[in-house]
Image (cartoon, rainbow, N blue to C red; front, side):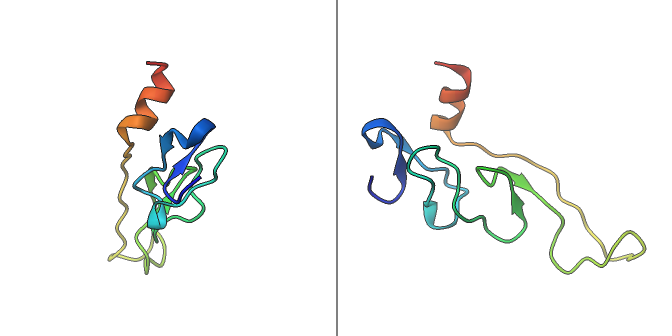
Length: 78
C-alpha cells in the first residue's frame, strides 16, 4: 500500500491523527502518534507535556477524541 492507506486493495486511508499519516497496512493502526496523543488511531489526547503531577498548579489535562470519516464508517458498518 502507498503511504497513508491500508486494508484490502489499500482502500482505506490512515487516520489524519497518525504522524505523517502512516499506519499499519493491515489494521490501520497508527505507527506513531504526535506528542500528547494516545490510542491505536491517536484519537485520544493525553496529559500535556511538561506537567509534573497533581500537585503542580500549572498542570493541564486535555480530553477529547477525533476520528476520520472513513474510520467512523468502518466502525458503524456503513
